[in-house]
Image 1 (tube, rainbow, N blue to C red):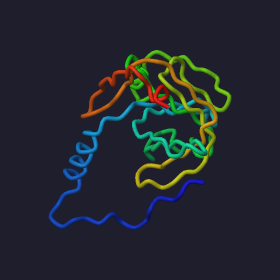
Image 2 (spheres, rainbow, N blue to C red):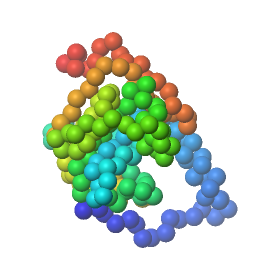
Image 3 (cartoon, rainbow, N blue to C red):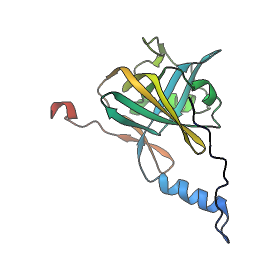
Image 4 (cartoon, rainbow, N blue to C red):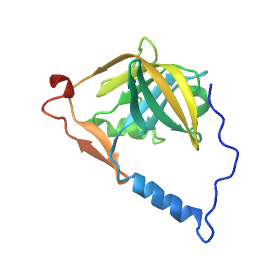
Length: 178
């Protein structure tokens, strides 16, 4: 069940316009480098993909992840209550990120996952069953219980300061340290 958005108005600070403040807030957030992911799922009438950079782990037991989806996203309402996959992109997959961000390119290669569809040759993926959804202002915070996952070696696609960049693969992954 999706929590309802707040109905009370956002307080306005006298003497300040909201647009410059919102732009400055967005610019401040943009200083934090994030990975780039695509959330994929089967909607009522078709398959969807949404490029996101708001993704995080929530819990190891049970394994939970969170994605933040803008309410203005065309497929936002169709994601509610549906299984989904979070596809983490490799550095070479910028065109795929742009495809699902509204700048269509060649049709991507799909893999039929056990729980939800995923994209071929991504850096990592997390197939999820819906766990919960919460109001996040102009976004909905979707939490999924991870039922299947995997990764491959390679550099990660990242986003910082309004541009794509690369996060090089470490020589040792964390799993080698445990």
